[in-house]
Each structure stands twice: as C-alpha cells, then as structure tokens.
Image (cartoon, rainbow, N blue to C red):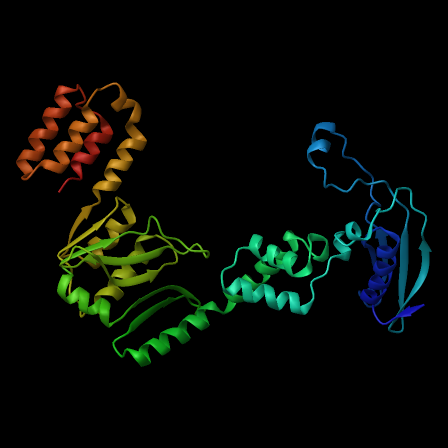
Length: 373
C-alpha cells in the first residue's frame, strides 16, 4: 500500500488504531545520507516505552498517566520516488485495548477539532467567554460530554495559539485605532518609543478631554503603575488628577516597556509635549527610586511627594514585629502624619512618639523621616 506522504500513512494507521481501541504516536525517523531528508518513519503504539515509573504513592495520584508496557506494535514506512509504502507492520499487543469508542476518542492521536469548532471558539474568545464556559457550550450543543471530540487542554491550546496571532499584529491594529481616533478628534495625540529595529517599546496617548482636564486641574498629578499590568507584562501607567467635584480624571495613559528611569523619563517628556510644556505644580507617586530619578530630570519644576498609602503599607510589611512590642507607636505615628498642619507640628509630634516608645534610632523610621518634605 502506498501513500502520498508520511502524514497520510500516519492517518491510515491512526484510523485502524481507533477502530481497534488503542492510540499511536510517531516514533523513530531516519534521514537519507544523500539528501538529509527523512526517508523512513515508524509509528508505534503509545505504550511502546519501558515503564520506569515505580513510586506507588505517585502512581495513585497520577491516575491519568499512560502505563507503558513495551508494546511491540509498530508500522514502518519508507519513501521511494515521492511515495511512501509500508515495509513492515506488527499488530500483537501485550496489553488490553480500550473498552469503548468514547474513551478511545480522547487518546491524543484521536482528538480532533474541525474548522467550524475553531471558528466558534474564536468567536467566543473575542466576546471574552472563559474556557470552562466554552466547553459547557460545546457539551450542550453536542448533547453530552462524550459528544465533544476534544478536551479542555485542546481548547486552551487553541486559545493560546489565537492569542499568539493577535499578539503579533496587535500593534498594527492599535495604530489603526489611533489613526481613526485622530480623524474623529484632531487633538488626539500619541507617541511611540521604538528601538533600532523599529519595534515599539512604549507608547503614550491622550485626547482633547485629557488635555482640557489638565488645563483646568493639572496643578496636581498622580502617577502609579503598581496595580496595573496586562497580559503582555507591560506596566499600564495612567497619569491622573482630581477635578473640582473630587472625582478622578485621566490626563494621559502610557503602556511601558519596563519601569526603569529612562522609560519613565520618556513618558513624562511626551506628556509635557502633549500638554504644551505645562509642568504640574505637584506630582504624587509611590517611593519607587526610578520614578524619583525620572521626575527630577523631566519635571525639575514640580514638587514630588509620596503616597501615604504606600508609606503605611511598607510600615506594616516591614515593621510589624517592631510595632507589636511598642504598644500604640504605630497608631501614634499615623495620627501625627494625618493630623499635623505645619512642618513644625509634624516634626515635634514624630520625635515625641519615638521618644515615648523608646524607638529613637530605628533605621527604617529614620529613613521615612528623612524623605519627608
């Protein structure tokens, strides 16, 4: 029997294996010394290996593992003048075959996902339906779990493959969206930071609403990347403020390559360029060193302050044992921070709290005191 390709030969053997109740896999290959192309191929039962798995405790936990029996079932094919023919075949198993058709279909070589299944999966993926719910939809439409010719792992692999395709073209689609936004809003602005290969590293954008808000409420700016990342691992960096109603407003948005000082400096420079080089009076961030360096270079006329939230969080994380043996020191310091109206009142209250609780000279508290402004 001849086949046009080794893939056709594998399919032929897989069909036979499904009818008989076992699964196959591609085994050894042999290359031609003249052409370095594969000239011979063997296909084997998926239990062809030696079973070296002996730990009984682990054996009980991994019930889905295929037990190897050194099965000798194989089919050998050889290429000759563009055609592949069977040269040898062995069909005697040393193990029991699968008891039913529905179990056989979930063996790796028998799983299948047709074009219409993939199309439906991609549609559901675009509408953000979770993989678990996608499997429920297929089970409902096929009548039962047994009617679905693939499992959750196959579904996740297909979703991952589609995400990789989207990832490779997402920047092109984003630039199209930016172009359309600019047509609708002529004041829409975006900037790209590219490397020597013209690959986009970071980007920034803002629109007429962000610019209008900044012109009215841009004296105070908040900048933080701590809580916002995306599936590509790029820090999401919104530049925000507060309007006259006390609500958060967005001045501009950045997607950054990393959180280094040079990257932050590029973002702040592009932000100023979009805002007619109007510097904010005050910017508040966390205690990130790279942000501080970037602000000192790109925003030299702006007062830099730190979030009270981050300072309190760091105190709780790093000094819980220290506070635990010093009574009300933590509550006293927080009261000083929140209720002081003048620098002198803060400094006096801070020193009194440390002295009262025998905490003078503690390095971390001294560091926090030194960065006050």
